[in-house]
Amino acid sequence: MGRVKQGLIELPVHRQTIPVYYVDSSVLLNLFLGSSRPGEADAAKRFMARIAQGAAKGIVSTWVLMEVITVLRRARAKKGVTKTEEIETGVESVLGSIYRIRNLKFVSGKPDEISHTGGQALELWRILEDGLEHLRDSLYTVEWNEEQKSYLINGIAGNDALHIMLAKAFGCDSLATFDKGFWADDRPVTIYDVKNDEEK
Figure 1 (cartoon, rainbow, N blue to C red):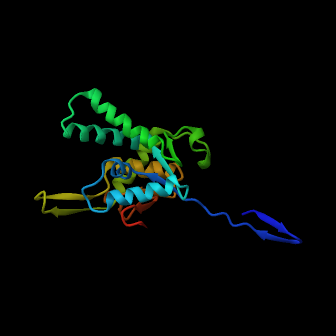
Figure 2 (cartoon, one colour):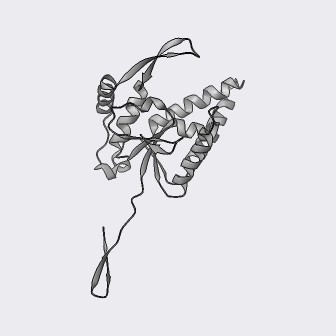
């Protein structure tokens, strides 16, 4: 906190801390593809508008972009687009829109990307080992799903465990998502529920 001199009195200057969110793929996909779940698309628009307007900062990892590309390709194929060139044109269009969002930083773990955490390059093997350990230690339940007529695991998935470790390594305040799989009781970072605008 800095200080400003006014006459002979030094007044403290309070600087507002801007939150830094690790943006999950579900947020970007709901923003550009919409959602069948009521309220999710609008919530994604409101959240990303906060970032674009400078009220918050967003971190998007290479891992998130890989998930986004995979889902975009599948979505195009489901609509009957069979030519890969046409699929990739749609993918590039969405990626271009994502890259243009203000105050959104794209990181892979190189030192100059994460200087705020000490500037140490992330080691993939360490992230993978930490993710595996978190997955093994995480809590989950087995619940009956009436729609699918089967028992399902309710808990964090392997790829989500990696996202949590990346959010922690990048020094993010919270991981922003619509995915309830992140809401396990045991996690090293705060989860921000974008739909309900609350921390978990």
